[in-house]
Length: 204
Figure 1 (cartoon, helix red, strand yellow):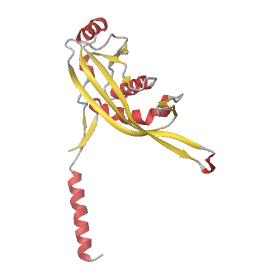
Figure 2: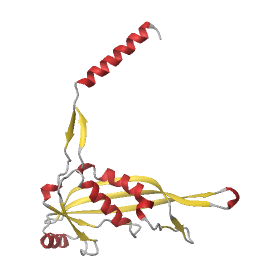
Figure 3: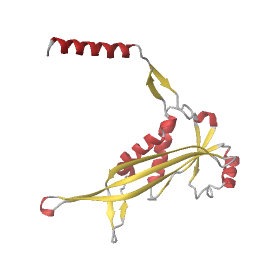
Figure 4: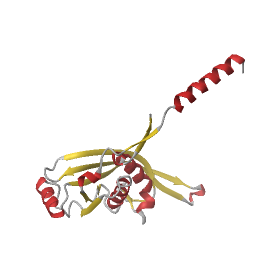
């Protein structure tokens, strides 16, 4: 390296160091403060695949959403079927019955299943998995009016195992342990969908 090149490199390092030295890291509170809603109702998230995936996503979302929120009171209201739908009258009745001003609800949609079949040497072994496209839509609804006051959506594509194939090409995710089968996919979706509830950091 020539003397001129070394001088340019040293100058660049000095400029970067100087510009970073004056910056500090600041804590940015969550955009959505659940404590302001006093007590939040939670309707179990629905899933297009049925089974245990809806309850799993609901639990993971709740855990992540309240992680940076402190002591937040959340009351489980059951599934949409349990609460007689999401009509304005049903929401008002839920608000009065459970003393909640807002309700969290969500829907997980699994689509575009692309099977991945791998056969071992000698056709003696193999594995079956699939890549799936998934979307999670969540909203916070005001019980007095039925209006959505906050909403978000998340999308992810992930490889998922533990599936069965039936005649006609239908695929069923039938793992005995949903967390083991879907955990990675659920974590990605929930991580995106709960950003407004979590603390962030920025340099200024």
